[in-house]
Image 1 (cartoon, rainbow, N blue to C red):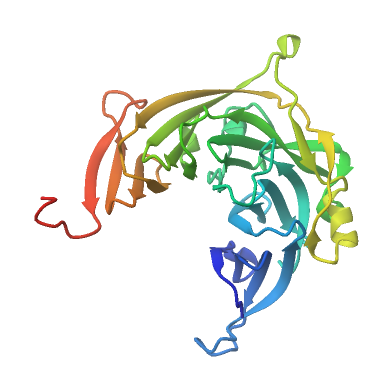
Image 2: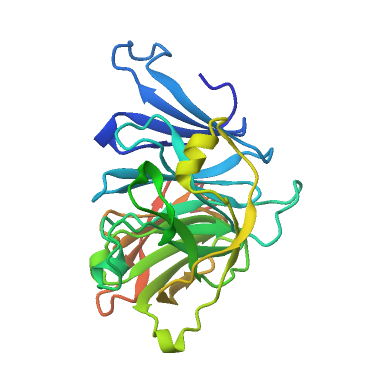
Length: 336
């Protein structure tokens, strides 16, 4: 039972059982397991099996889950109100009973003050096959990618294999998060970000919804960097110093705190960002954007009571237009 405000709840992949992840105003991330022997609606159907407390004294504000099909492995990403992004993996490969920290990155240069308005959210690449692997740019089929909002910007991270340290389960090198791209700074705070399915197209699509009502769609193209002309920037970020295996052993207190500054490995990819669509007056204030399962239609919603559907054009796949509007509330005579 949770006695505080719940911000988000996510299902994990059912390959290892029925698990839920929740984050709340009590500064905790909780892992819940279903107990089918308990009666439904009894209050005991799901039991808390693991709790991680944010040691920075601020709540987690967004959580996302990614299932990597080849490894049958779930990754969990959280971000807190200070903009610290944490990637978790299961501490044991066969059962999701405890989470271990894989990597930790701060997505803002200066943490916001407590009185400042903030907005941080996460969207994993939902595709079972990442674009870099589909294009033959890497042999890492288990790569995870995610888009993270940092107030008025969106940063793109991909996992990079670090052969110098050990991953969980002693199964090979660990992964580290590397910032590979950033979307253009937007004129208002970003309320929502969504990574589109459909990696078969050979590039990625990412949509944003902003506090000023704007809806934008970006194209992310990935190529290989020429080693002789490698101009990729070295990003500095805050991260945990130990491997995820060490965290699983030494971090039994289930608290996240403490980090040092280290240099992230250079991305081997060249990422190009192109804005395909921008409607600055789509909503009064946009609160959510989400793709359909094919990644060919985008739905956006705001506080104006209107859901809008954006569709790919017929003449060009880079053309996007408004396809439909859905009134979520009845209009008054004056509005009509």
